[in-house]
Length: 343
Image 1 (cartoon, rainbow, N blue to C red):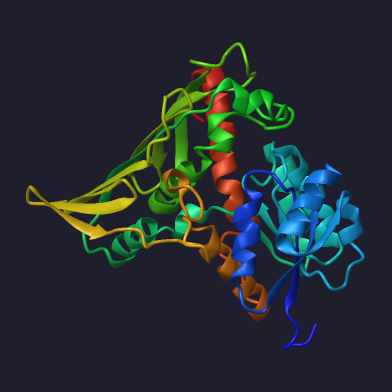
Image 2 (cartoon, helix red, strand yellow; image 1 turned 90 degrees about the vertical axis):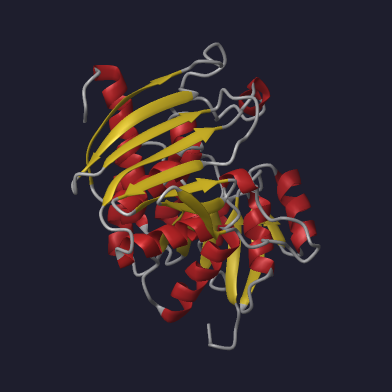
């Protein structure tokens, strides 16, 4: 590939998250989506027709394609590690949707593979790129509000029976690896550890409050987190609500409190609340909102950053090591729920 040639991209998996990746690639200069892959040939052909590229039903066909340098994984959780491993061995850069894998051991094996590879492994935690998340990091790094004392994250969403029965890989330990924790609320746990730092211990429980007769895994979880710097954290997540509410975040500092509501960030000091930032419009070429506001609309920003890193040969910040952090917390919370002890 010369500097003048576009970076060739492929996407494996043409399900619900696929359009966010494909539309983001369409808006990137110097990148061309060349192939989409799905084990359902009809789904792959339809996606290929929409985005004017080739279609395939077997991802192994990508391994010998020298014109494809980056591959996006938008597949069920249990396929991530095996696919990413094969692609990295073939020298392909891999950007995978969260989680790294459906099980911690598989994820750790994948990260070990990435260390041996000259190609990059990136994980999609797009909410780190949200305007509110970036502003919170600015406050933390500048120490403007003094020491962080405690923080919390709340996720109240809705997933009905059809969500699981229409995609049988969901709701099963062997394929999804968990429920609300590993699929939906992993983003919020990732933010809490990104803001709070190293987690010393986590204790809590998981339950199936609404869908116990449909899924093997949890639809509700809560936890207390103790950070190495003495910060305390609380976390609650459920898929048993009747709507998808925006994620709520709160960070209490010595000199004020930051609260995220409706994707906007507010600062309270001296009993007065002020708006710190609000999300910019994230629209496609047709003027439609990209993504869903209740779980973040920053895929485009993350994907653009990943390709910048591929181009320059510099490290993408949310690599395999970063992706392991939230997955370890989730695994430890499952263990805590079983043992009723902190991990």
